[in-house]
Image (cartoon, rainbow, N blue to C red; front, top):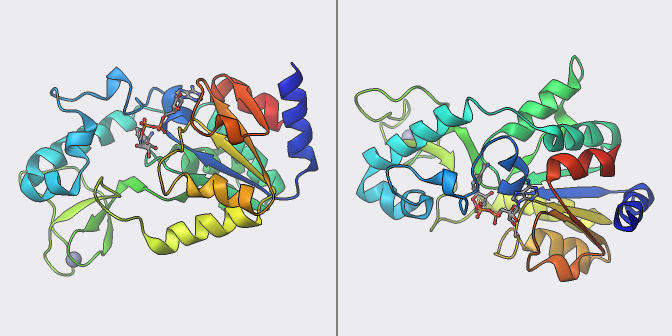
Length: 248
Ligand code: NAD
Ligand code: ZN
């Protein structure tokens, strides 16, 4: 199809490529997007549980939900979309991958595709954190996650309550991590926006930074989004099918 030819040419002609991914890229791995039905747990919506207010009011329930998500994610594996991106960045190096996802599937794909080599070029900047890690809600110290026991996990340094190392609704993103993602986008001449509606700040700021610096956008999404109009090429389809063809 014509769009695919145009998109492949844009990729080939670009020196620095950045990719921004969202929940849509993991949909084919069986990870529910928040808007899909599979995201429900005990009739709570994620928007009710993944908030700093909910954590401070009722950490037990929020922790149980995250423990459920962790065990569920343990059964999910990277799909052809994660793998195509990992191979692409291992090969191309320049610029890199930014994700809103907390599921760790890009990291797994990078390690698997790198084999005995270094996965670094394909490791994502995770602007919303990583669900597989803990962080102290008081002092910020990071720790490896442990299975949830009878009492909630506490920080080894200060005794504060630990939490999953993700950005909850109602919280700011880590400014250093966001600045890193933004500077990658500014230096890129092409931004691939994959499986994300990317209309809400600060995720939206990433493709817009590439645009403002004179670069282009390619969108990969099953549906139209608020960003489609700003894209030079729109590839309508599943990330796991589109990306291997786009990036091979
Ligand atoms: P979102 O706004 O990122 O929307 C998902 C997008 O993916 C939609 O635009 C949809 O059209 C598209 N999509 C669905 N299936 C696709 C496919 N197979 N290929 C390409 N595109 C596809 O996400 P949301 O689900 O509303 O989540 C909001 C926030 O929560 C985001 O930060 C998101 O990353 C995070 N979240 C993360 C995970 C995860 O870590 N896997 C899961 C759920 C939500
Ligand atoms: Zn602490």
